[in-house]
Length: 262
Image (cartoon, rainbow, N blue to C red; front, side, top):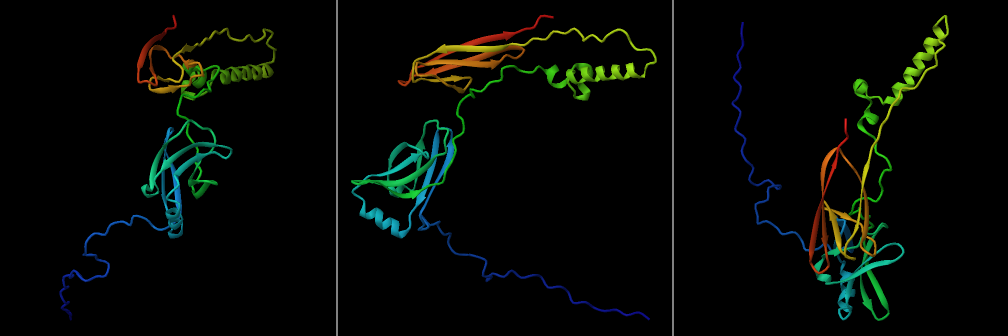
């Protein structure tokens, strides 16, 4: 005996055009502010900061009462003031060009009154990344063979010093296991290695901006510079550019070649 049952056909889902989460009005604009005391500073690059701020209702009333005084963004470290830039409170954002500073920086929004600088907003602290070639250089660079081992051991990823010690240990164990001691002392393998580096020094007009292949080169007060570079195998082009404060540009190219005779 068999039974059959007729199942109702599924109805097509109908779109709910009146769902409360479906918004069908005009697009709303973001508010111009949130009525909160806020000052945030961010790093754009090693030479520029970006700040944005907002005010509560009470702070804005204080600003309205101080309209006759100039407003500033003050960049400072923990010990000293770095710079002070006049701003307009209604701008709500500003870019600040800063010098190279190693300490942590913060920004104050305030007004210069007759009795002194009145701070209205304080920002977070940030650190400035290095915007030039590092002055820290290694006194000696490892060659490829020193770093990864001689060619016959390169697949093991060990250094020649490791294999030299391993060979010494192996011969010592052979000496202990041998019935007749080996009378010939072990002599270290004769070797010679050498390397070199490049030192470039010179002088340009004081207070100029000097670039080496697009990177800033530090100068002293008299415009002198001293650079120590790794000298790779083959030829290299060192492109120097000197930008004066009056807009003049001078450039020189230094061609260097390293070749080790067989």
